[in-house]
Length: 167
Image (cartoon, rainbow, N blue to C red; front, top):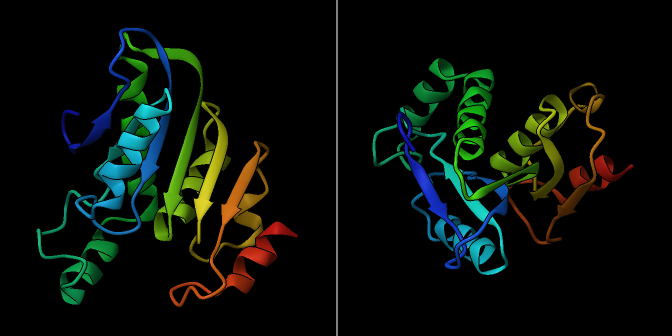
């Protein structure tokens, strides 16, 4: 992907496939991100994880000072623009079907997936894994199907938060 980089995986067979955006909760180099894209490709989807953390130095987010500076200078709206860049990139590919697109995200990425699903007319489904905290007014435009996965032992985001979202 030009500009911000990312991971792209697609089925081996020639053809046109539906697409899924994969939104990381941390850096995209954590193994679950390329593995998720690869699993999507095996299942018959094109998976793209845009590097929404592209302004960060490589040692972040473990470097809290750099991460805090990133968040202060690269707002959620900026990150949603990065996600839109990923969607636009996918739309321009001949191997991506013209139909709907899905978005899935992990933790902070789950929050972003839900925000993007509420704002984009291109998204037909959202899957969020232990999404970050959400406010009701942020979701008022979220009309597509949403599936939330949340382990009860999760320490980063309380499972009660996802239960609130479900209601």
